[in-house]
Image 1: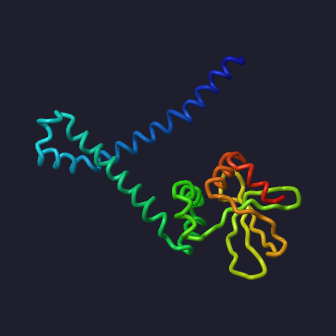
Image 2 (image 1 turned 30 degrees about the vertical axis):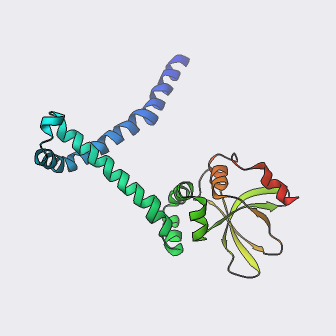
Length: 197
């Protein structure tokens, strides 16, 4: 009976975490190929690629087009779109799709992030506890609005208001903040804590 349950557990786990995602990717790739095949066929005949690449030329050209589209879109998202959207647009996007926030902060460089001045990553001290947090608004002279996310995601947490004079924190890098949240605390430089002493 025990071995039966163990085998069933292996089958369910393998199906959910390997077979189903692989099938979904294959189906999506197949749909993309179906859409691009006519263009791939036209390009293959236009440049006479069948004589060079053989009978699989249309499939190869269509797959190459998928790769190039992904490459170009990724380049523009990381180097253009992710860097240049406005703070209002960013706040709206992150409200509806919180996972984009972590994606953005993991992919752009620290210098590019600081130019936008959207959220400031900090290590917040409350009593004897330190929390990874973000200053979301410091436009008011007397208080700070601080968001403390739940790990390992950014789409849940607490918004707190602190009097500027009572708030104890040190700035950390966005890389440290994202690593600490995603990895349940790992990734924070121990030297940061010396700044509280």
